[in-house]
Image 1 (spheres, rainbow, N blue to C red):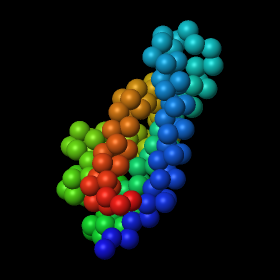
Image 2 (cartoon, rainbow, N blue to C red):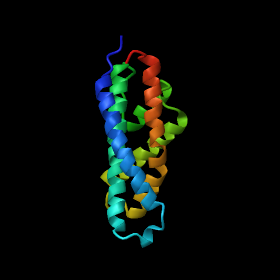
Image 3 (cartoon, rainbow, N blue to C red):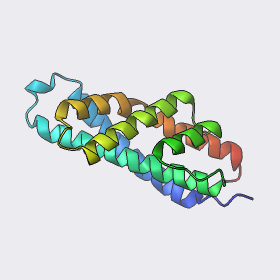
Image 4 (cartoon, helix red, strand yellow):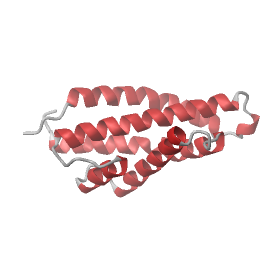
Length: 149
């Protein structure tokens, strides 16, 4: 029997829902000609924070799944994605999305001086509209593997 912390996963899913709704509002603003938007830097910072939270959501969910289903020990963030793909939790396209998120995370945290508003906006516009796919695929996997949860 698997020991998956579904209560924690549901808590993360609920939190993600709130973040995603705010991200949708931010997406509408950033899809406009951002040079004409007052407080443009503030929106870029909000996008960076949203992406950082998506990264935390991804790693928390991946760890809970990998530990709970006793998959194997990941060697790093990319390995987490590989495991989720290998175990058919996520599709290849979602795996690529997660790898893009990892690349952005590394840039924003480890090389934050090299990161700028344009890179943040580009990453946000790429990742935000499709991050729901990750959550949906995880929920589908859980429904298949833990039908009573």
